[in-house]
Length: 79
Ligand SMILES: [Zn+2]
Image (cartoon, rainbow, N blue to C red; front, side, top):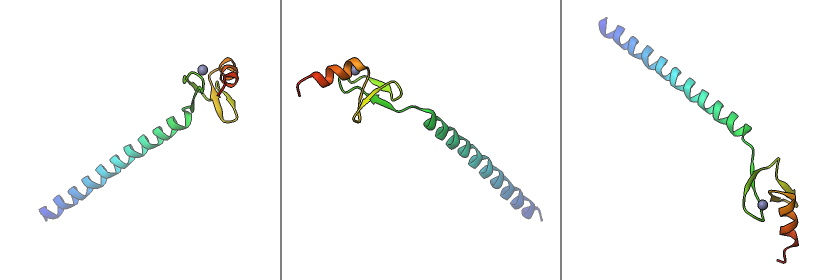
């Protein structure tokens, strides 16, 4: 009888430990996904190589520049 009670307690312990772990892992996963969704994509300037957020970058034909000045300088340069 005592062995049965110990066995059931052990099972309950494993059950709660697993539930706690999966909940923690789930929370971490959700938080990471939210952070990834909020993080803005960075674009490297084709002229100077500086990384700027996509919303601030000057994008021309899929090429990113940090400023209109660098877009002009880069496109005026002979290839
Ligand atoms: Zn630049």
